[in-house]
Image (cartoon, rainbow, N blue to C red; front, side):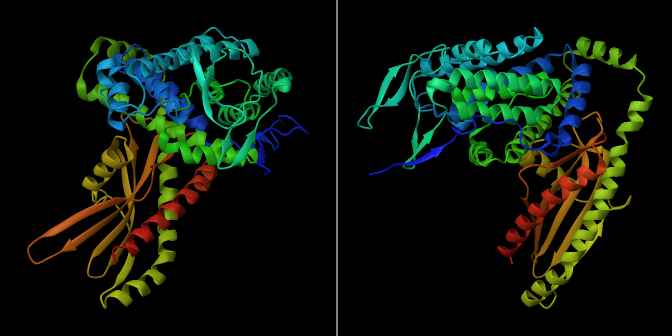
Length: 491
């Protein structure tokens, strides 16, 4: 019986360069994230909060890069403990992982050490080489002595693992009855030389980091140069590109796995854009976490000496022009609010028909906040940010909203809330949507909210308005579809 084969690496071409002008692939918000995070790091330099954030991020990367490869499984609650408190045996209780505690801890520490080695590599201003990639592989797999393989009969067996050396045998897995083929062993050395040479050319041409990280990750995965561990090296190399650009390491969690695999498959077919967009999304996730640092310092009052030293450094800089620049984002917000009001108005006639078919009192209308009403929905905005979208909502720097109000026997409000993120104000705002239902009985009123987006929409003072609008319109369309589906289940 013949076996279906899927060739990830094309024998006719080998790996290919970026196929279209890279600026068409770039994510416009990345440069803004980079600049604002650089400002925040300068202000927080020397604080224990920044140190703890970096440590937590490296532990999260170490945990998730192994989960993605099915090296082990760890319960979600235990993962958070390990991220917050470190890789200690007492935290991996019986049943919280599917492998031995010592095995998992050794892998986690190896993976964290490898990421810290990348930070050192960047600090030393070393250039990427095939020898360094081999070093990285050996570091990531330091405590792993065997790997799974299939014998000639298709049975799983363990074989000794070769570290820091290109593969000598094909490593072609079978998925859903399909044989996945990568670069054959005899071509690996020349293909890796080509990969590194192309990367250096991209560095010379200042290709955007999210584009370069996605390209390098995918082309490396096409080669799959190692017997085992190529996936972990892929994500480590992508992290190297991003960290070198003053961004965050690439953390792909188990929740991202389907989107990650879909984006890689799109790249297999020549479309790198979904992978670039996914990497941009993951940068926004880490940026939201980073915005909580300043708020933690303000709320806890710890590490006062370091904070005062940091504030003194900032105070010596001329900030007037920067502050003026940052507040341009408020003008961007007004444009998005007005556009959202117009967009929702277009939905009103059809919604009125639907609601009137349910109730004779059915109606729909759009409202936008003003200086007297901008405090409406405050409790729901904070709840949505804290419990669902995981960021600190700053309603002191800015607050506004646009809502689609729907009435029948119930009341529903689709709210697009605009406000700051983190504190102090850094020149970035978010739009955070939610759906609020209100039921009125004889003796009581109950309110419930439903999140309608996986992430808040972040936009920046130093991002071109047309690019913000382009991103926002795509995001808003998805939000409204989710909200309408939720509405249909509650009519």
